[in-house]
Amino acid sequence: MFANYPRPSMHYGNTASLQPSNWSSMVFYEPTDVEISTKPFETNHGKAVKYISPNLEELKFICSYFNITAKNEFCKMRQAASLAEKIVNYVDNVFVTLGSDGLIVSRKGAAKESFPMKNNEQIIQVRHYPANTVENIVNVSGAGDNLASGLIAGILCGLSEEISISIGMEAAKTALKSESAVSQKIFDKYHFCWNTPAQYVSVINKS
Ligand SMILES: Nc1ncnc2c1ncn2[C@@H]1O[C@H](COP(=O)(O)OP(=O)(O)O)[C@@H](O)[C@H]1O
Ligand SMILES: [Mg+2]
Image 1 (cartoon, protein in one colour):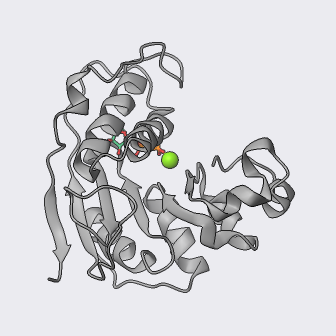
Image 2: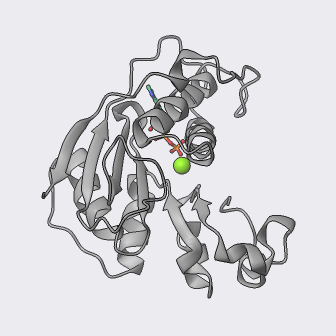
C-alpha cells in the first residue's frame, strides 16, 4: 500500500485494493514521506500492516508514534538497527532503506527463510545489506518504491529474504539509472538476481 491514499480511504478500505475483507490479509506499506508515515497505524487496520519499508527519518517518526525510543547512536546504521529491532513488536517485517548505505532488515527469522514465518520463531534478527556501488546514477527518486516492488515480487513468490532483497536491490538499481521514477527497463525471472542471494552482515542476533 502506498502512503498517498487519503486517510478516509485507508480507514474505510474503500479503494479497490483495500476492500475491508482484504485487510485480513497482509499489507506491505511504503511510507513515502515522514508526515504520512504513520497513516495506516492511525486507522483500525494498523495490525494488517505486516511489512514496512521506511527510510531512517520515517522510521524515527513511526517509532515515536509507538513511543519507542532508542539510545542515541552516533552511527546512522546502528540507530536504524536499534529502532528496527524494537518496531518489530508492532510490524513483523521491517526494511529500513538507507540510500547508498543499503538496507537494514529486522524480523523474527533467518535470511534463508521466506515470508511470512511459518513457525513460532521469537528471536528478532537484524541484518545489514550494503548496497552495491551503482555507477552513472541519473535519478534517485523512485529507488525506494522500486525496491519495495522487487521485495513484494520475491515475497509473493515465496522466496527467501536474501533472494527477495537481491531482486529489490536490482529493481532499485534500474530506477537509479532511469530518468523517470519508474524505470522503463524491467527484468524477468531469468535475471541473475532471482538466483543470487544478497550479501549481508548480521547486526543483532540474540540466539
Ligand atoms: N546511491 C545509491 N547507490 C546504491 N544504491 C542505492 C543508492 N540510493 C538508493 N539505493 C538503493 O535503493 C534503496 C532505496 O533507496 P532510498 O533512497 O533509501 O529510499 P527512498 O527513495 O524510499 O528514500 C536503498 O536501500 C538502496 O538499496
Ligand atoms: Mg521510501
